Length: 200
Image 1 (cartoon, helix red, strand yellow):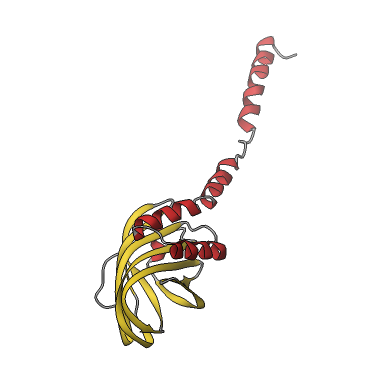
Image 2: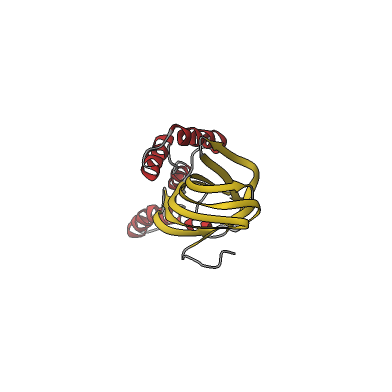
């Protein structure tokens, strides 16, 4: 027969052992919430129009129509670039620009870009630019070459927009320029953290 002291010790030890052996509950809710927040980290149309107003002084009806067209094609961007650029061409063209990348999650940073091109293109211009950026989950993924997407371009009331894509990331520069430029070209945009003289 077991002693009363042994029986009492056994009763006290049993809940503790059961508690230690019980597995910790799995909580996946915070991870799911973080993914949901990331998917919703985009700019609304009103935010983009206001930023375009600030970039161009006053967003004209043509700028608003271009933005509306791009939103219809691509939806809401998660970043945009406001800047200025200059370009010139005599068959071989060069484009240099500098601006600020505004990322919905990562904030703001300075970026540079160059854009060599080739084609029956003559002249030069200076432009204010406003670039819509899609699927840029990591800001460092911007710093690559982006070929132009053939057949994806708009020209409305002196405001131009064309599409550049590398992988899932899509850039849509909207330009309102001053100067003389005649012709067409094909090329790419290359983004970098520092300004470069050599455009390739």
